[in-house]
Image (cartoon, rainbow, N blue to C red; front, side, top):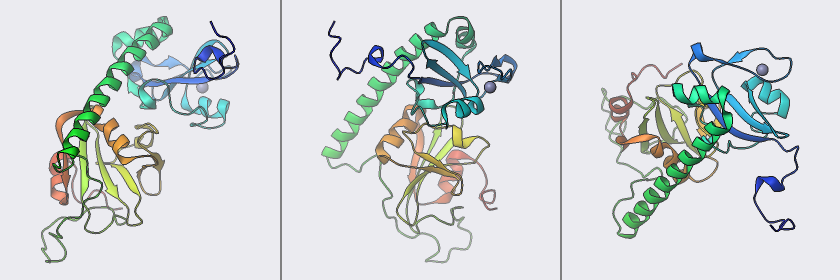
Length: 263
Ligand SMILES: [Zn+2]
């Protein structure tokens, strides 16, 4: 084996001390596991960080992870699952403590499957665009002002005061039941906003989607919108999405009420 190959991405080439974030997972509260940070002694069930550190596998609560490495994003994106706080099945939960390596091997397989799925979807999207069909993923296509301009009094308004006026949104419902809306800020930035919002939303999606901006109440897309939406779609059932300029359409798809976003 070429041990002088410095370009290799293999983890064996990394310094032995380098810590790696492998996965962020969640288990049922009744099945919580011990945080393995020395001296912690807490049990955790949400945002359990699985880390390989100095040849050792550790499960850490997010607080201990943050303290140990100097920040929640200090080790970058989780190798598996993108740091989504994937909820483990009972079987996976057993593996988490009994045989963490076996669990990671499973994640590896799952990741490969999702990757293939996403490649397939993106290829189909490119084909569709090449045929000049309306793109399935439209970054804030302008829409006719159906409300406001014509003064329709009963038309519910989008609940985000910072939203670019007269822009469309992309709403999607994930298999876990959470709803997300791609909304363009009037300064041009794209956000992925939870709807209805929920506690812990800022830890629900991985960096490929964006960076949580608490003051806005959503993830600012830092990379390509397409990549963010591709991630969401990989976690959604096919028909559970809509591009629309109407708030009522979002409510129909994702639930919630028009009034509950106002603070
Ligand atoms: Zn801890």
